[in-house]
Length: 258
Ligand code: ADP
Ligand code: MG
Image 1: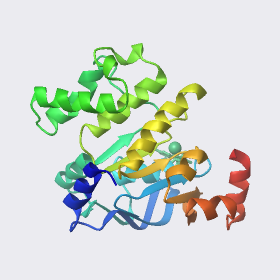
Image 2: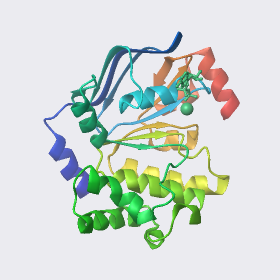
Image 3: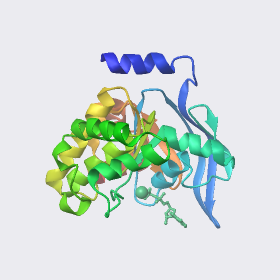
Image 4: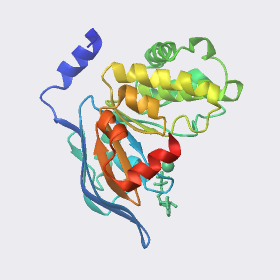
């Protein structure tokens, strides 16, 4: 463990042991039962990869964790905070949880630097100069400090996604959620984004990643989850998950993507 991640680990010791807990979570879109009895505990520093067919509820589950979607039954506890309708607590949770989407969702009319300083200045009330220092630190980390003055449209997809990761990190989240961060990218740009995610994983960040990049899953995941039709069908460490899937539906899915 690096020195900084050790300091981080020490700083959080004694707080909520689980980073994320979903207990009997159910969600409906109207009559459609999209999440069915989801149970999942994510320990601090754990890296979870979520895979499964399109429409199985992966995005919905991830989005419930920072309350972009509401669940109707069961409990979701993030960093010790239970998600209810208490908006103040939801704001607290959103500060702790960074999210990276398939489509980078950068603000097109703001520079890369401004994209990164906006939330720290307005949500964390950070002075501009400090926010810019933090932004440059993370843009350097994702290896594009020289792009700081450009606009998103001037960057490649891979560069934009790395900005999106840096922007999330500028809020100093304790948990990072990724929803298919490489699936909108041209193949040659996938690696640069995955490399960024691997280095984040190696620093001890708690991560929940929806992705079909199974090489990434093998390399960094502590556990891989397979979802189908709103349920967690299978959850295991990568080695047994890939070499000996227990469920027919998992086997079928893996045979289609590997
Ligand atoms: P995945 O990310 O695994 O592809 P999603 O969580 O996006 O799956 O969607 C799960 C199911 O819920 C899909 O059938 C989808 O059409 C449906 N769904 C997603 N969002 C909504 C919504 N806002 N309203 C109604 N149905 C939705
Ligand atoms: Mg999705």
